[in-house]
Image (cartoon, rainbow, N blue to C red; front, side):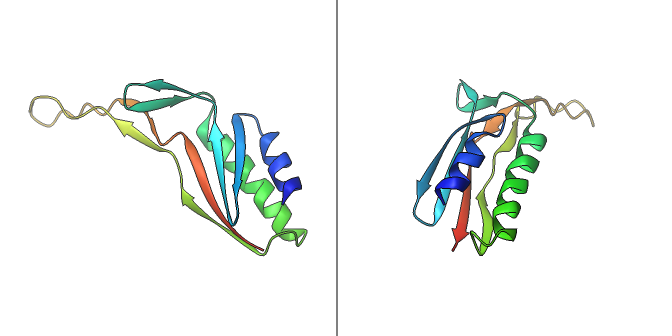
Length: 105
């Protein structure tokens, strides 16, 4: 498990990884903007790299299975005044700024 934590901390965009028994909390480099966080880097690429590391350790028989528990999601600005069918969906950040992964050994 310690090798998996070390491999995950080497992923670009990952700040630190906390091992909580059968779950991992993967914190990302982010900056707080009010009640949401601005994640630095491309979230899709970071997710793919994390998934690759977890699948790699599963194929090496270090863990049996893993599952996403919580992932960062985009938060959007609330809809302004009703102006016909105009939709002003501007992203303002992400919530939460970390991943939670459940791991079974």
